[in-house]
Image 1 (cartoon, rainbow over the protein chains, first blue to last red):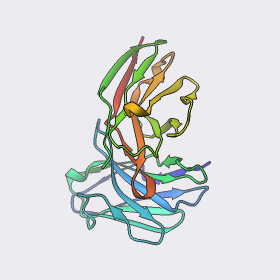
Image 2 (tube, rainbow over the protein chains, first blue to last red):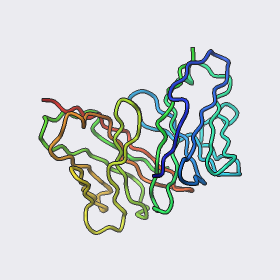
Image 3 (cartoon, each protein chain N blue to C red):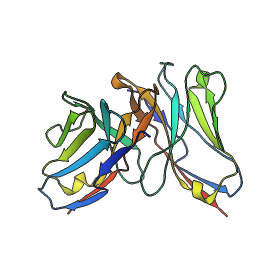
Length: 116
Length: 114
């Protein structure tokens, strides 16, 4: 149980276009979703925390207008990379808290974004 | 902000040997426990083991055990009887802050050799 489905697994887009990444909780309600970014051979860096029905909380240094996060329902959170540039190429992964385990977390399978 | 350090960027171990991966954190907040995750080259995050901050006994899950020393703010992962499939990136992580967001360590790339 407690599966988060993330799509797409990989995407190549042209510079200047926007890309949407979806994370769906399949068998539980994800009130909170965390979005991470990971460069090759580096750690996961938290970008933002989204809560269902409210605005996302962004970490310091993350551009809110570039990385739009929407958490419109208890089962769907999306990250849109707007006006993508090559430096946005990275691995993006979402994570959700898993009730009722107090400190449980489940992760999506990640999205490799390449901007050309 | 909490900082978590894994001092071994890369480790080699021979198959069937045990290996210890280090993890230290800097916060004085002892409320939270600590997770270890494995990330193979495919990118998925695989949960390995968790220990709560108030757990008396060190956690064990199969070949994985956690050596949690709160006074030293360290929680090292021990993998016994290493297998080739254990070759991956390993991260320790700890909740902190509002919403219990996870902060990840810097990671250790483990390679298991024949």
